[in-house]
Each structure stands twice: as structure tokens, then as C-alpha cells.
Image (tube, rainbow, N blue to C red; front, top):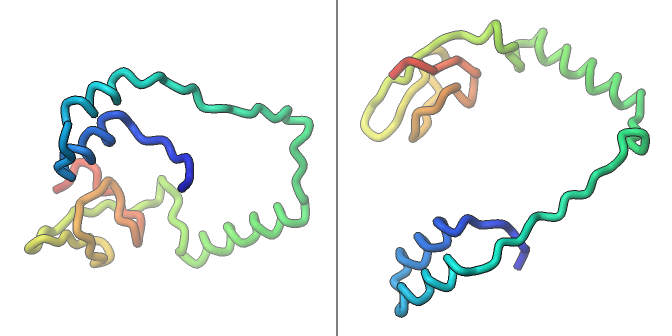
Length: 116
């Protein structure tokens, strides 16, 4: 089991949804549990190293993907709207379908904000 963080509200919901007995006693324990500050390790920027050759390769790859249309810069994103059909939404720009509307199409990056 890993040591992931979970909000108190999410934990309460999980307990309620699973119908545990002694629900209110468990909620009281959760509400009164101590808060633990996450451990944050600061690394001095002088200690950070990078491979200049690898950085050049990545930069060249990103530029190539932009030229090929795989990556769309924010200012050049198409604008679209979600077309709702049954329980799915379809991007008006590329036709991608997903089961929830979002601010951007996850396939073509079309900006869907302000549209429905």
C-alpha cells in the first residue's frame, strides 16, 4: 500500500458509500485526526544538471511535432463546441468523442470554453 494523500471529505464519502457500521464514530475520528505536513525537499538550483544534447533532441522533437500539427500552440488552437448525443459529447472540430465535456478537446486541443 502506498502512502497517497486523500482528503478528509473523500475519505468520509468512501466510508458512507460503502455503508460501514459506526459511521458517525468514524467521521468523528477522521475530523479529529492530526494534520501532517507533507515533506518537501528543496534542491538548490545549482545542483540541477541537464544534458544539453538531450535538451536539443527534445526541443527538435517538439518543433517537429508542432510543424506536423501534432502539437497546437495555444494561440493557434481551433475553437469548437461539444455536440451532445446520448451520453457522449463530440468535438465539432475533429469529431473526437468522450463521455464528459471539458475545456479542451483531448484529441485536437480545440478550445471549448464558453461553448456547450
